[in-house]
Amino acid sequence: MSKVDVLLGLQWGDEGKGKAVDFLAPKYDVVARFQGGPNAGHTLEFDGKKHVLHQIPSGIFHQEIKNVIGNGVVIDPIVFKKEIDELAPYNLDLKSSLILSNKAQLILPTHKLLDKALEISKGNEKIGSTLRGIGPTYQDKIGRHGLRIGDTIEADFESRYNRLKDQHLSILDRLGFEEEHEAAEREFFDSLDLIRSFQISSTEYFINDCISAGKKVLAEGAQGTLLDVDFGSYPFVTSSNTTTAGACAGLGIAPKRIDQVFGIFKAYCTRVGSGPFPTELFNEEGERLRKLGNEFGATTGRPRRCGWLDIPALNYSCMLNGVTQLFMMKADVLSGLDTVKICNAYSSNGKHTLEFPFIYSENYEPVNEAVEGWTLNAYDDYASLPSKLKEFIETIENKVETPISLISLGPDRKETVLKKI
Ligand code: GDP
Ligand code: IMO
Ligand code: MG
Image (cartoon, helix red, strand yellow):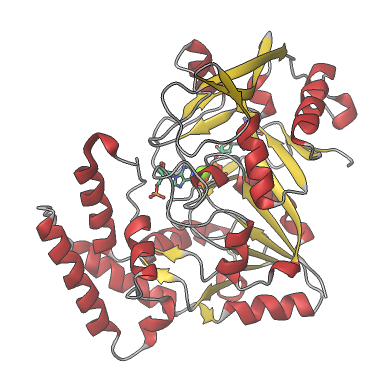
């Protein structure tokens, strides 16, 4: 019996999960998304082309691999159709390689309107949601009146859809929000026809059968640990469990089936949307990271906020997820700097703390350490990387007490170096 490896983000999302999954995928038989939905934007680059996936797992370009959209995911059929259309030039047999859980929840056009209306109603306190309908869809799931992919083939689907839509319209009415949804509704029903033509099943059986047959499964996280609904910087979070526990619930895998947990982090930090960010840089250093790191959202195009690496947050994420190996992404973006900073602790009212706070108050200051920078030249392997970069890597390994086994030095699949652990 084999085990499942989990790959997930340790920061506020956009760590480079898409690239890492695509890089590792040839070692696996199955890649499975376990939470989130079209709020995710996972970028893959190879053969001079860039691809952004939102709901479809990042193993999709490897035809021999099965890609599962698990029960923990929320699916927008309209986005799904667009993603399938964009994959058309690659002649992939998606009907055989993509499998959808019958239990994944459906994002209705009115969920997106609710997302918008609720954000507007929050004023300055807005979360900075991607407005993809994620929060309202998970709310309906937990409230036990959501609609699932498997419901779309039932005879009473349309009447259940109308009932839920009417509930949404009455909330929108109370919020004083008005926007037409009829065009989106037509697109929604057209897109459902496409979804129904794919394999839809109780994917928890499929995945557990694969495990029993000795096949290798990689669970692909979306968002990041600091956006987790329980442990992130609440309420500035997403509406799902982005942690290893979310992989168990979002795919139907028992905890004892989890083997390696790959924790992905950038060599610095970014955040898109509102919420606390202790190491955020508001100066030209932050601007430089944004420019060189091309830090603009893969889903919404919004500029990402940038700051130095946050060790207390990284330690917190490793603890919550049981990370066994770290992957450090975007080390190339720091190339050419005289010094690079690392936040070792937070200072609040003259006291130092290593704990990720319940609420970050305004007076949380990062306690930074400056380390010598490096300039990246041609490299073949870990040994050929600049010595100061290797020192930086070892410093983080010591601070987080977890080995770094993969270093990413550019967006392309090939710009990746493995380190023996
Ligand atoms: P994800 O949501 O975690 O999959 O990450 P995104 O795709 O939203 O954002 C990561 C961005 O960084 C994408 O534009 C990637 O192409 C890019 N990227 C990934 N790894 C690296 C790297 O090591 N160096 C650089 N410069 N870019 C990278
Ligand atoms: P990937 O998988 C970065 C952020 C939004 C907002 C908050 C809530 O590409 O790493 P939501 O739409 O979920 O209600 O938004 O979470 N957010 C992400 N930030 N990467 C993501 O996904 C994100 N998905 C949501 O910006 O602050
Ligand atoms: Mg992203």
